[in-house]
Length: 338
Image (cartoon, rainbow, N blue to C red):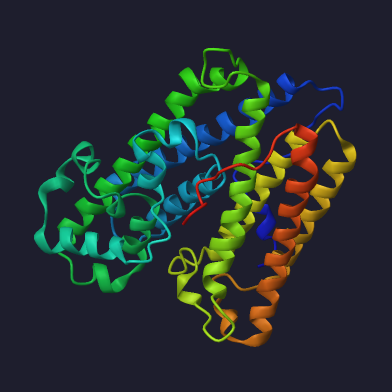
């Protein structure tokens, strides 16, 4: 997995002054972390949809490369599951995973078997089951031969184009709402607004950081680890596309950026967080196991557990040092109770 750290779609290198006010910290995060990320996502999914409109062969290198670029952009903002991302379940429409019941392959299989005409319009496709939409559905369409080999090629092409078009429509709506409305809610909180003050905005951003770290530790790493007696490599995220480790690196890179922005006023906390993230990323760099297949062997499992321990070390630093520094607590998050 050499040089995996260089794959980020944009460089997270915040330059911040220790004299920044809370308002300046928030404005910088909104401008350089949130808005820039969703612009990238909008552009990459639009490009992928355009590629699919002219080249819909599942094994096409151009199609798969476009998918990879768009997916990278999603992972870099996937921790921002509030505001426009959650309107109309947009986040789930882009990223329905984990799918412990196998709903996505069943939903796609039913469409293919019935040759459902809903694929004739990306607007219509936006009303199908969430399980048949977004990045994880597209992974099956592009990388699961069992699903695609028996399909009518013309219908499969239309289905790929519909899913890609729906993804582009969804991400464009998210980016639009951030630009035109939600960014201002964070930058200028008010007594009658969504956020009544800067502390509530920081609480939201802190929660996004904590939830992102939890998801990477417990889901992206925890699912393939399973138990010692029963590891589950085929529960790794997008293993068919060979992206499991890539997503951990992308997520940690984005979360590192957010954590350093939030801790800008305290060099000691920022340094500890940077050290913790860098340790986790270095361990991922040396893992050389793109889909976590090594968890079936004791040594491979141990190496992935070491990565998970490093991520959990960052989580502890965020909870015990960054939270009190910001005057906020972790609170409820989207993973609680799952």
